Image (cartoon, rainbow, N blue to C red; front, top):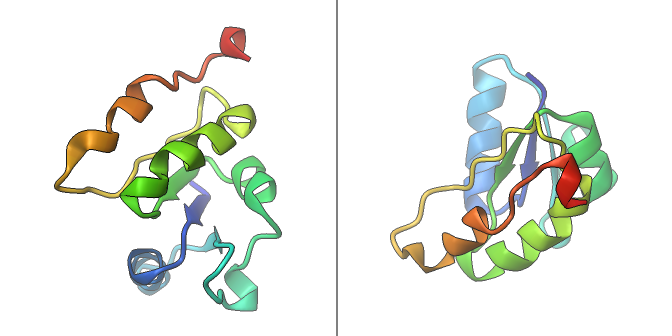
Length: 104
């Protein structure tokens, strides 16, 4: 499975290091954080189109906006887990963003 990491802060960098140690390749995108060239995606659309698995490693307050931005690019076969958080107030965004071709 090709894995894309959206967000390359502490969590995204740590996940990338673990994937690399385990022998997996990945790409990441973050508008602010520096990403090594060999792992940097050209943008969100490229990250989504080139990977089946997406990890949303973004701050909880940004999760809703990120999901809304991703929605036009996601396919039904995408696997997109978000990182765990204690405050589940953002979780309704996950249930309001079904990814079906009829929703586009």
